[in-house]
Length: 316
Image (cartoon, rainbow, N blue to C red):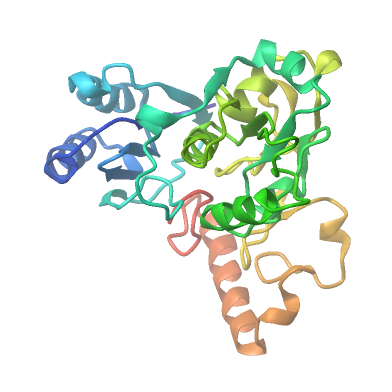
């Protein structure tokens, strides 16, 4: 039985008074038993919250009462257990960190492409298709023909763009004309900001997938899909496939990398302690600490309790 509702939300909008919103928003969440993390910045709001159906929708109504957030959309998922332990409303310079000043997605984002029109766009052989997610996300799935910038964080993307704009790069002008570019990410927030950055760099034809990969997987029949593999998500599901059905990946509790069934067969994999990706990076002392944490997790499970020591996927 699913007892908790999770809502993932973001909106790029000019919020010069964002700091004044922190206290009343936190009070609203706490009054309705809602937990999670929300980020506020001058460029908008981003985050994920969870609670009862009525509690989550009370917070969403509170946000919608601000005229600037009246059109705020969210994605819902259900969970048998509360995925967060506390409520945090944080003030940030950016709601998703690119690290480039004067990029305003609310004013400069590229052209939205609906999921049902995405395949037609990808059919253009001259299109440069860029996956704006991090390397560990791309590793378990992406669109056919997409370029992987091999970034470890979103803030590395501008450096990759600068390099690829140079002569011989995939973003270099051809006969003096910059190429058409399409970008995509999990839920839409990173590609919305990255297309604004591309427009600031002088690219005129820039597109991004409306609603992100998740909306595409939810909308597009698998037989017609250009998606290959699974999509990493920042919650307890770890990965999803077409129809947003939970995938086969789990999470390494040490390094947070997604692990396939094959990864879990590695002799270096130990539940809650290590995997082949991180085994060599942690000391014996650290591994012993992780073993004790895992023992406490399993002990709490036998008592039907949550263990506060396990950092939840998607939390900070």
